Length: 139
Image 1: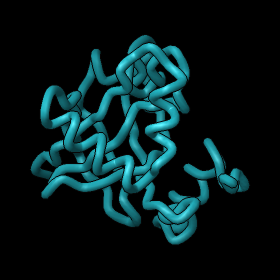
Image 2 (image 1 turned 135 degrees about the vertical axis):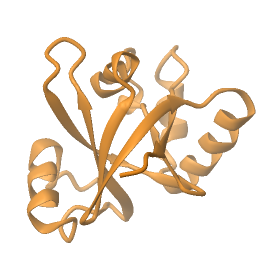
Image 3 (image 1 turned 60 degrees about the horizontal axis):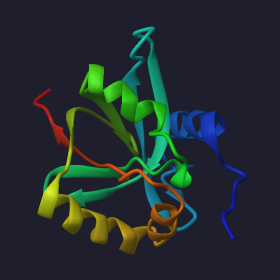
Image 4 (image 1 turned 90 degrees about the horizontal axis):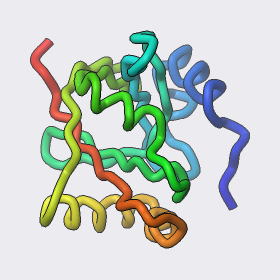
């Protein structure tokens, strides 16, 4: 059973005000805050997401619980791939890209170890759920 007592913008608020002391670990898995630029408004939007690592890169999954459409944050990346991450107290600039082919398959398996529900989410939708790699940029 997922504990939803820390969810959405409340998760973002508590994570930010405690530098991740509250919110970094969520339901037993690590989370980060992803800030994208709105594709229509240009305004920053922040979303808490489960993440993994692939060497220096961060890996996130655009599952939206298996909904038929991609999440808004993923659609924002098509217009502006430069993002900001917060991992605990660290703020990191990065560039996002969608993993493809063998890399996507490998990263999907790794992320499904972290959050096994991803495999269930994939059965709920016709779309291929994107796996996103965020490469840190120099400060």
